Length: 380
Image (cartoon, rainbow, N blue to C red):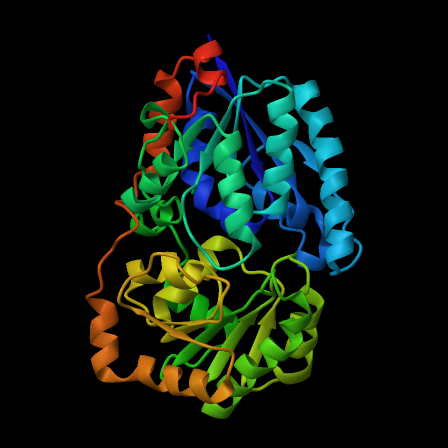
């Protein structure tokens, strides 16, 4: 019997990471893929990336959560709307199981809706640690989910320590790595040509999100980062932040400081272009998880700033600094040094073998969807 698998996606990064898994689900006679797009995908302020999804997949439903501004209050109200509308989607599509990725608010409230409908949840990327509200949401998702697909054994160990039964947990690697290992991204020279970059000079990629525990500081934090890059004189590609509270402050700093000809700014870059850009860049700067998870596969130095990713597993290619332009500038200089470039190029590839999607789909093919799956037992 064909299983209906609903997959939720709310932003470009998670969608790009899941694409190999989505293809396998779509193409297998064992499954019916129900892809649901929400949050940033259907918001023009973040590039309306639904169009990117529709190039390759049929979208079963879209959920506009109507986030009107960057305040914590409005984000919270928007997530309330998301819970209500995702309940309707779950009832209308009647999936056998839903896949939820990551640690964001739209994912958490969707899990709450699924739980009350006795809909089994498979959670990807649980057990990770980072220094923001994401930690609380990620660990809450772990307790709501029925199957766990963490990226590393370290994350799996945390899930077990939270009282989850071992048979529910399978380490698969990080989904972001699948397409990168497969080489399924725009060739670097094509990206350089398309963006009008100088291949003879170092390229800095800047991607910084608000720290969700300190959204009011987002503007000042972004100023420190952009001033450090500006003072370096290096050509820089700046990408807008995600929809977390405080993103308006980050965008205001970008509009003020990331000016041509040194800087070029993009609301969004499709995943293949983004990875192609990383493949030819000299350093990534900011606080995106991409700076820790995706850069090692390219051997790319990364400067991780502030607390948003604090505690997250990382390889030897990552330097950590506070929100201070002098410290950030020094870290950029260090990242570009010959010795550190060598360190980055030989760093450990700790986030898997590029087969996460296949492992997840095979697990979903084998699992029995019954009361044993739904009725969880805590192990302590």
